[in-house]
Length: 353
Image 1 (cartoon, one colour):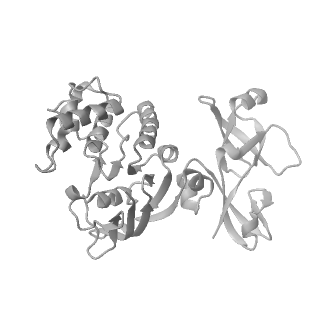
Image 2 (tube, rainbow, N blue to C red):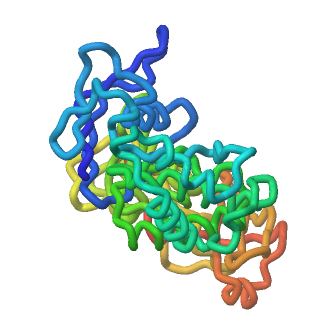
Image 3 (tube, rainbow, N blue to C red):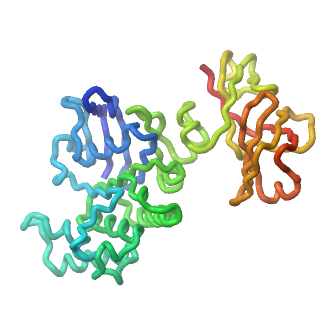
């Protein structure tokens, strides 16, 4: 079931939550909406579901080429998973999952045996088939969220929508569940859209990532495209840590701080003020000078916890920057706070004004 959003706007009082947004989600695709608070991602999800209505006369929402913008949420065939589970506390796991099937209109409602079979099929799918008689308060947060997902899937939705489904969970459980969701989606192939504020989650789970800001879409692409080939400064800054320098492009080179590097070939005709972005893992640290362009810097702080060593530096010009190096390289360098080093970028991204 494909989704096509055409020219959707939504205003709350004087606040423009969505501004002429268009987006296509292919059948069977898992798409992440990611952006800062207030960027419009949850509003867009709720409009797709039918929980909110777009501004009158504004745009259309098509499910498999059929406009559903004026349909009630109950007739759109959408499964919705909320951040805080929204399970019925007085019902056990079995009854929570069965709920959507039991409240169908009489002529559409399956018989008891069909409901029982469907519920146990889903409980096995979410790896909770031994917990049918437990109540929500007897489950962990991760288990409750899996029950909420099973309940949404019970009615065999055409589209699955998830609003920050792992946002209320701790980091370890969240990481486990997003890997589980990716595997589950590969098996079911339900067209899915999920909202998250966690960039790492979006990049790890989604087939495509939609980056939103100020009610507009900044970029749509695969996780690799939006991270390694950002369309603009906002996307570059939003997705992951980055060091930023002010510089100037002139005759095919870009100069920032005290070094000069070749400007990307596809934009060599552009001259003027520029901003240079360098990911921490693209900042190389040397303890001695070389013939390569480098910045002299002082080591301010070293964090060795984790797979990479994170080194905070400050250049002679007072610019703070972060470098991430391997544990193996760190072990050979004898770095310590206050020491002088020479840093050079392996890869830069440049945006001109």
